[in-house]
Image (cartoon, rainbow over all chains, first blue to last red; front, top):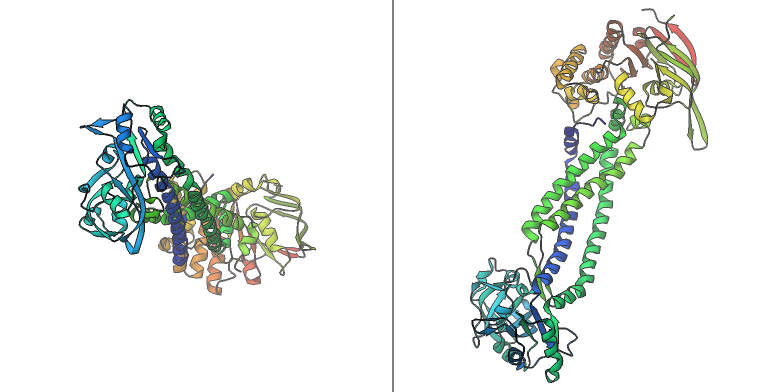
Length: 387
Length: 231
């Protein structure tokens, strides 16, 4: 099949700058929407996947319905676990047994009214158990000092970019002043959306007398050993759950939200495509006589359709590239707060590929129907158009 | 006696518009020899344009046969008709129908892009066609930068660039002033006499028929009169 020169498609774009602007703008908005939705889902999944370690087991209260925030565990549990379960990781004399308190509490200084945030009270073994967590600026909080280690995303959501600028900031937790002394990063895990403080300080501030869970890291020990410990120490009222399973369940819990976000984005995108079809049809319909002329010269319908699709694809590609550029620049790591903490939109190669794919579909689908409507006319009738 | 170049046998075209059945061409029998310059006249609705469209292969007869050269045009599929048009037909429109985003050179080159020839050969043929119609100095101009007469010359160059057997003209001077129309008709006559091209021209203007060698009158889809024109 002989096709029309590519310049024909390129030059046709310049025929109506207003129409070109509409098409490019419309495509960019649709692609941006798709990037936001897929970046949201991607970021959410990545946070849960990164947070779970195969070697970690969470011990939480048996009546907690497998929710750390609702869980209550005795303060003595961590010491008993360390003494009773052999084969746990031990480094520099420290057992990889991390007693933790997870409290969702409004923190003044984050947002106008105080934003509900997850604060995690920890002791030094936390950094041994959660080896994905690294202090990227400042230092870990000391006990008794009302100090905070801010998740990287929390610092960014507070407007600190780079996040280390947050160091020295004073925040108020339940009327107690806390000072930010460091910033942590956790390979995209949920800890990046949390604030970490000393377990003792958080217990005092929140007036709790029990912790939320104990997280242990296994070396030679098997999950069954820890499950057996939980099952035999009925006085401690514990259940043991692999950390990976915990975050998988959390991920499953939030899956309907992710699905809703994707469906909403898809519906809006379809609406935008239908709107865009009108613009494209108007552009092609104004050239029906020219299309008839090209057919009279000997160009086949397929060749002309291909040129019209090239034209539409070009406009969509411009919009798509703009959207991908803006998405990577403005949307990546935008913080999304949710009840369990926060995660960042993740605009990675896969998400960009979705954006590019959407642009491709927009360009092709957006042209096929209008092109078909213009090309199905008999040539003789096309030649009379506009007379 | 040689076989006519164009042979129409009981050529019929019928349309249905709503419940109405329209027959702009009704069992037309017509022969046109190679190298003839035929002017088609007749009132509106007489079937002139329908006949021109059938000859061009942009419409298909409902009944009858149409042979052009050795090709049974009436039985060609849509795809084969497109290829046949590209090789054998040059079409000149009343309103020129140039592609506005292409310059004069590119407009003339457009039909050649359908042929398997080298870029140099394409350039040679475009230059020859533009020279033949006298617009070599306008090759970079876009249609909006040309006068009506110049646009029609570009359109004629586009029609002859493939060296087609058949030139079809739909009121080629209908939108031009008298002086420009005369120069365009002189050009068509030169293409007919010097290069031996067969030309079929639809016209409303009796003044333009003097350039043709044969005048056909159509009425209600039938041939009314067939006369030789003496100039």
